[in-house]
Length: 303
Image (cartoon, rainbow, N blue to C red; front, side, top):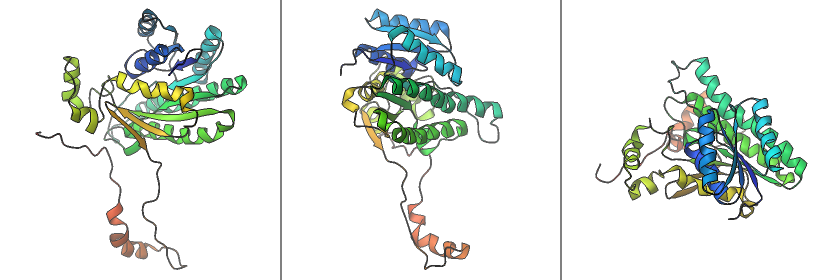
């Protein structure tokens, strides 16, 4: 999987999953623009990549605005002459239940995740179309955006919106040979440290213990490095025929998410559906197919 000659921008790549993505892209030969809001963190990330023989520079800017997106693309072009890969990873959490979530909580998360993905992809698409050689856009989703999660109205909205944009951009950019895909990762990061069901496994990783097969396979939970191979694959020529997809990765688990689709369809006899008719039909025809919300977690044997 050789990415020599490719140039990538990875937002939010000072630590965690973003750093794992940037490191893997560099290891495969790409030059990388590392991004973080903390200059010290970004500088340390660049140092770790270059110490391993890679090529990287830092652009310290909070993702969200058009100006930040333009600065990231410009840094790639000024330093390395082009842009081939964009990984939209930058994100924050401001968790609260609906009745406690403030406008500031909502806007901060949506600005970074959703607007940041939009502005960065728009800027990258303009550059990639000008180059005329195709490109790769990889947007980071979440299981929360796919099925919901308690206390994460803002995050769920942003991550669901990202996958919706991915499907649209895959169509709009196909003629330019720019693929657009969503990665749905599950890994031990600062953003998952408050998730109760993975706490025992996070502690195991902190203590240097290997994760059991249940965590790595049934839960699809692992390290940030476990998720990086998918990003490198989607950035490569081998993935030229893959676009508009949402692909899960975590631990030993690789999964292709389906697009939302109708699961039950019934027709009225030319009169439409009145409220009374729906009430009569629902228990027998629809109730059994109602969809779950939240992640349906398997139970580890012996617990």
